Image (tube, rainbow, N blue to C red; front, side, top):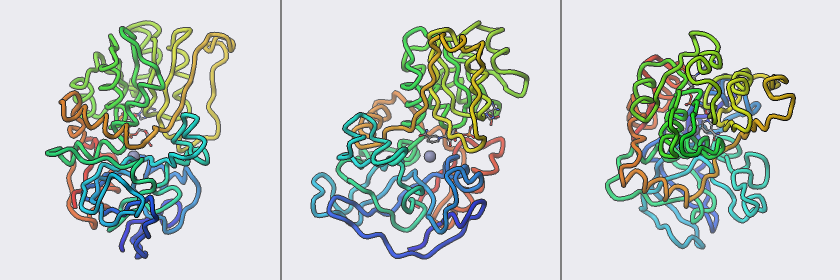
Length: 349
Ligand code: NDP
Ligand code: ZN
């Protein structure tokens, strides 16, 4: 099979590999739709996870099952399936402890393009098929379906990590596709005000549509100063963009007892600096929770229902469409360049 791989830090290329084999609990799928992710960009061009050679990229896909393991009960060849970016080992002790995404090691549920070949290929392997796959609901648009792999569950995990309650004043830092789903999730969780930080016009427009009540452009100065001049200190902050320095701004504008949920993949920088005084000298109960989304089938099924009942419209994130495996390279490079009109590209096979 062919696939688009990381060839080393800063390098991608096409590779020919043997189709992965199917264990008794596994599935082999062919992609029907895939999407490049900012995480692919951090992995290749920032070398965030270290060097990788000939590892096929991609972790966001909708697939069709082409081979199924003998022990798999609920899926068969020909099924169209939602594939979460995070596919934990559900019998691991970490999963039993409530941290499926860290099954066997930190971030261990993140297998595609991290520990094994990803989905930018003719075929890809899914471990624990019964625990990780979900059927694509009848009639679901492929753009909506593909955004269930990562953008919806990660954006929503930011909402969970920040623990948003009714009436909270919320800041969402970063309104790329992940942050936009955090805006939508914060609105569903009852935020009274959502200040969204970003600048690309498409993202700003969709943030307003998804529930943002105000927009902060980080190019116009310190985010904390801008936010505090409008609403004072805030209850909750979701970080879905920015750098290691973003945390200092977040701590500054957070109320005592407030919570920060980080889903940003910190690709560069060795340390995160927490300002001592604004952090209440270590005693202000300002919490920072950073997490990888949990993955798995139940979450996919539940989030898919939110699309079929029209509670969320993640397909609106798609601004650029491509066709066929060969075009994955162009779509990935587009994600790297981030032109002003881009939110998220989709490749249909
Ligand atoms: P994008 O690059 O599309 O969006 C980033 C956002 O952050 C944009 O709105 C951008 O503004 C804004 N931004 C950039 N610089 C700053 C700054 N200095 N201060 C404040 N805001 C800034 O990213 P995605 O939405 O695709 O992904 C967001 C992050 O989530 C990435 O790091 C990605 O790797 C990570 N991720 C994490 C996962 C997890 O499970 N934890 C899974 C998937 C992704 P502008 O509008 O100007 O571009
Ligand atoms: Zn992703």
